[in-house]
Every structure is written in structure tokens, then in C-alpha cells.
Length: 118
Image 1 (cartoon, helix red, strand yellow):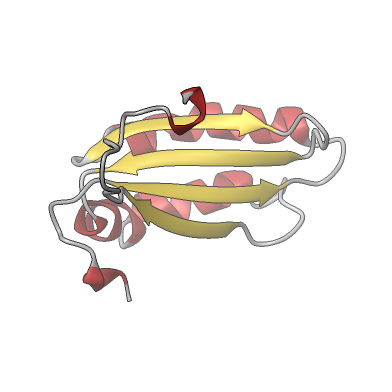
Image 2 (cartoon, helix red, strand yellow):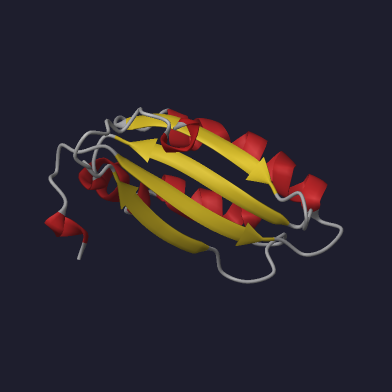
């Protein structure tokens, strides 16, 4: 399915992660340990995590990749992915929901233009 995206187009991986209540610090420690696994993959542009404000046990992991191939070949199909899953396994309430997003061009707006400022 993802192959419809141009292999050279930057993609944003958005992962919604619900952790077990009371395990938020454990998850953040696991993320801190795992962050270099993501960041050192060729084609990984950035990695960051956000914590829910209404639900402290909900996290959003945002990973920017050069391409789907970078994510798939450089991370998902490697031992790094297995290590990442092992680090967070004890903390998560359910399997994370992961989706990929690409930039879209809209007439008159650039991807960096702030839609809400108009």
C-alpha cells in the first residue's frame, strides 16, 4: 500500500502508544534508551515523543524518514526494531497504532505555510 508514495518523498511515521497507567516513566526511560536506535538509522531525519495532556498514559511518537524504504529496510526489518519492541513491551497497554503521512500540495499553500495563521 505504501508504495503509492514516491520513494524519495519524506514521510512522517505517527505512532499512538498507550502505556499501562503508572508506567509512564518506564516508557519514557525505554524511549530514551531506544531513541539512538531510531536516530542512527540512515534516512531517519528526526525522532520525538509527546505525552498526552488529557491522558498522561498516551504518547505520540513522531519519526521523520527520508522514505518508506528507509523505515522498512533500515529499521523495521532489522534487529533494531526487535530491540525497540522488547524495550517497550512491559509498558504498553496494547499494540501501538502506527500510520505514515506524506506532504500534500494544495494550490496556493506551501507545506511550511501555517494554515491557521490566515
